[in-house]
Image (cartoon, rainbow, N blue to C red; front, top):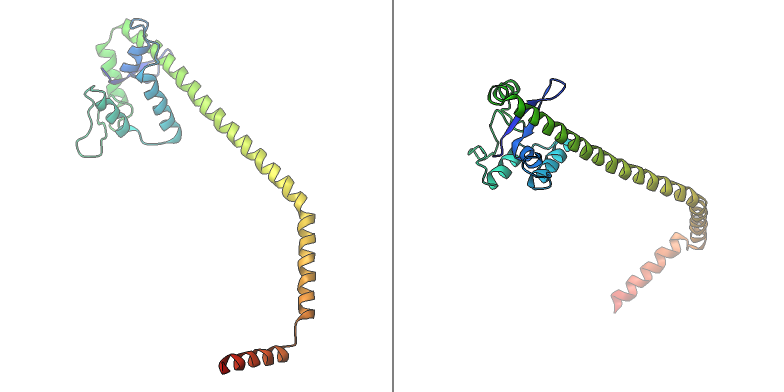
Amino acid sequence: MSTTARTPTASGTTSPVRQSRAEGNSPASGGTGGGGGGGRASKRALRDYYGIQSAGLDALAEGSQGSGGTADSGGAGANMDPHDPDSPAFNVSSCYESLVSTLGLAELLRKSAELVSEIRELDGEKQSLVYNHHHELVAASETIRKMKTRADGLDPSLDSLQASFSTMSQLAETLALPSHLTASIVAKQSTAQGAE
């Protein structure tokens, strides 16, 4: 079963728990969470981190696993389950009331422990993402610093090159024929080509 619900935590707040993932992590099932639920949670964490809409993707993923997900047949693929935290129709109070009224104390405590475990896992993944991006940012800053240092070293060479071009320009102007001679040479060449 792949439904999502909200369960109370030790602090008294409510948070989402995807039952298929929670069942894979429960000691009773012997799972370690390394199955399909872990990959889905990682993908969900990445989508949440980057702010990508995920309701349609989760509904399609649940439907492809044969779990009977409630994908909208309107073509958008949006999951309209009010107990699914990824759904645009998610209702916190309805989900909480449903869990409190249908589960006993032992199940609520188990769900709370599973939720704490999932939160820690997702927090670790988020910190890993931040660290990886921080490392890339530091590497990019270091590359820019090296480029600036090398560019500063090129300034004298560029100044010398500019002076050389200026000298060549002046030399070319000095060696250039006067315009009246250039015009007569061009006219002679054109008449010679016209005679042939």
